[in-house]
Length: 430
Image (tube, rainbow, N blue to C red; front, side):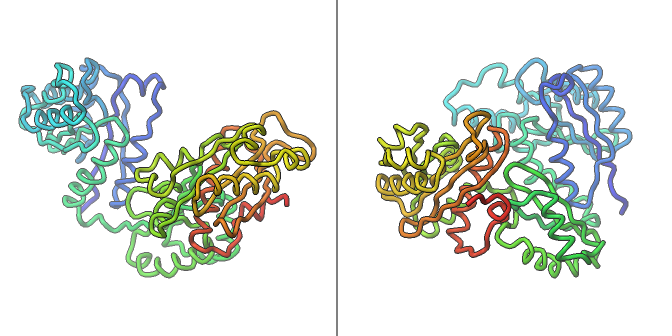
């Protein structure tokens, strides 16, 4: 069976003006890549009913599958249902399944089902509903000119769930012979793309051509993908995967099975499994570590208190860092972060701690302690470790990277890692 011709139609004035950056098409492409399928064409168009109808008719003549993204909302410029009805020459009708979904959605949020909301239940006659677990607008599917058309919401998280749980599996059933592509994905922290590639070139110089190695850069986590598209590659993939795991070691956060988890979530899962509690004492990160932890559901099981002591006065008052220590060593020092860690443990009665103090910039640095200098203390109450690093990033990225680096140090502590992180080897000052 030949591969289907898959095309995308993205709708919205915001996309055309640049107010919103398109990330949805990349996510859709990744979903299809996992099925061994490719997107042949992508079109972006403004919220104009005539243009939409014309484009739908044109693409439906060319494609086997058309994904329309956006235009399912409650406002006057959401035109996908209207455009599909015109293109397929059917009436717009109130769809009972969509109405039931809207009713439940409103009841859960204790809001009244109003006229704009009801617009989302007015769909082309005869369409099939695609459930939306996340939002108010259901998706729907129609067949037009022998083309299967899937209409999806523009909100990324809603689209991702809909694609993964319904649309991709539906298409996979229709084209089973295409399922030759197999992908293993790994989450990595503490290695950049160039460093990672260098390690692989030096330690695995004979990497096979039939196993595609890909990197997806991100902040803070990087993703490594091993992709095979034929039986020969499939047979040798696990062997080379094992070799890669040995090279990357504890820089691997996890093998991604479905939706990637945050570094904070991985830490919380380990803490929960070991029945441990953690506390934080932050200066330069301004509470970002605590925020990353508490963004995750269930954080209260492992995290009861954190301390943001930005000034020296508050370091002394809240965490009992001595004035003598601050005067002799400065706020960004081994002695001070160690005192911060001990103070946080004393106040919270937690089992583990992360304490951090640094110079985020752009001002405040010196010859002895330039911008980007940071000291971290972490570990169990009876075994607190410290390290000083130089991480010369802009203020925003410094804070984000340092916060996640602190979580990674705790992750390594929880797993009993004896491997020194690359960022410590490269950035250590003392």
